[in-house]
Amino acid sequence: MQANRELFDEVMVPNYNPSAVIPVKGEGSRVWDQTGKEFIDFAGGIAVNCLGHCHPALVSALKEQGEKIWHLSNVMTNEPALRLAKKLTDATFAEKVYFANSGAEANEAALKLARRWALDKFGAEKSQIIAFNKGFHGRTFFTVTVGGQAAYSDGFGPKPADVTHVDYNDLSAFEKTISDNTCAVMMEPLQGEGGIISPNPEFVQAVRELCDKHNALLIFDEVQTGVGRTGDLYAYQGLGVTPDILTTAKALGGGFPIGAMLTTTDIASHLKVGTHGSTYGGNPLACAVAEAAFDTVNTEAVLSGVKAKEQLFRDGLNAINDKYNVFSEVRGKGLLLGAVLNDKFEGRARDFLVASAQHGLMSLVAGTNVVRFTPSLVITNEEIAEGLARFEQAVAAVVNG
Ligand SMILES: *Cc1c(COP(=O)(O)O)cnc(C)c1O
Picture 1 (cartoon, protein in one colour):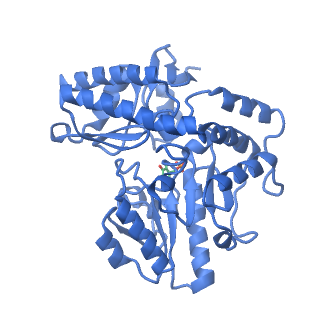
Picture 2 (tube, rainbow, N blue to C red; picture 1 turned 30 degrees about the vertical axis):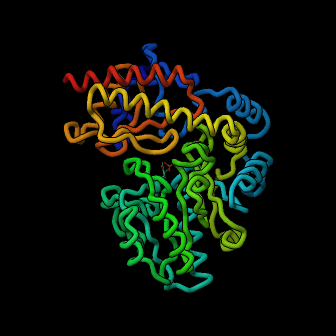
């Protein structure tokens, strides 16, 4: 059997349109496809592979746990899940952890918890959820409805009710919308999929204060920003604003599917026995790999390395821009960076992604106008230089038609 791109069209549901490149092996920030062509990976599996491909610590955790026990269900707890939960609570504001298998599931749990908390404490009136235009929270029906892109949530029939959207960083619109009937506010502490949009620190501070004033829970979706991505373990720590509930996934497992919702003991008490659950949530294999990823990332060396590597990316992208004049701005934080195309190249982010792949570089887009980079947090400086050189060739190819 030929496992090639044609087979995708034959046997896969057509909700994706993947590249013709089929990677078969990865090591650190290098990947090889079926033909042996080598790529530098600036995409990191969409901010998932925080330690690159096949990091020895993760491979050994996977092998070790794989020879002990794989799965138990939530009828029994397990050692890796307990250890990981303890480490997550020790390192954050949170006191309690719920494990899921993805970002959307962690967010689904957060939203259900917020609704249950509000119902228990204040009654059925307090059900409004405020979220932000261009926000992204996953693809389950509740999370995609809370996400700020109607194109993703329309066309599936009646949506979960009482979800309101306002513009990110628009404090006056937010102030007019929040009330005592607001149950929760869900936001990314830096919008990823929406185009790498940083929050205005005063805006986030004011959102926190207004949530307190109206007894609404503040939920930070750190699925993309979490686990070192912005140079802090979690982005809220760099913002100086603490949420009531935090969700984390993507980099949490370094490539193994896992998500988690973190909160306080008081709020967590509203998810009583039987109110919510997941067959695989807290699976020992996932938690063992995530524990190894967490131990490796949550060190001064890796976190300060992210800030140093951010500067290398910014310097390199600015140098490319000085030569080719393609970006209006390089924005983002840590290794969650976006090169925003200027008017001349408006809407052509995908062309840069395709040209990059042709020149041996894996990159991403965020919307139609931003080329996004979310590499491994431990990508070497040499790999950054080599990847930027390939990106420059790709930019030259796009500019020269
Ligand atoms: C990717 C992402 C999600 C969805 O995560 P899945 O694992 O795909 O369900 C949710 N929120 C944010 C901010 C994300 O970037």
